[in-house]
Image (cartoon, rainbow, N blue to C red; front, side, top):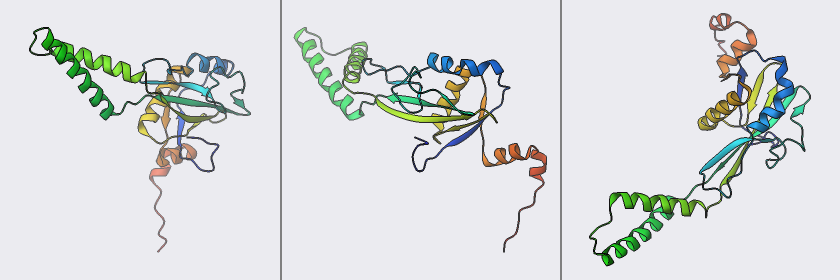
Length: 202
């Protein structure tokens, strides 16, 4: 998802650790160390990492800088390779029939469980190389003035992935902000928030 569109869904995070002043000079290098790695020519099922905010192919951040005034902007790219179950089922059936025919020619009555498992792994590997991974982008905006992060997704799996990669990259812990937590943060006093009475409009 993109913040550059006319509308988008996003989740707000707050950094809970003190941010060391030395971190700002290391941001680009830390992003590069955890940048996205292409799997088009590999049988991997997924790959994820940081890319440029403006260009998902720029993993070195050489073309467009991360710094945008008081903000840092970059993207979490996730490539996922999906082989449809029906395709796996068909090709596995073809491989098993061929294996059974060869076994009968050799005087064997059945294909062993271990061989079936091996055949399935071979079929999956072969099919993975025939299906290109599907790329997805999830942009990140970091307000360095108040330690707020804006992540362009509300999917729980993506939120978990983002949190894991952010902590690994910057060694800073983050928490998603619910409306209550955001109000408590803005008021700087959660006890005061708990004592507020709802307004009756009717």
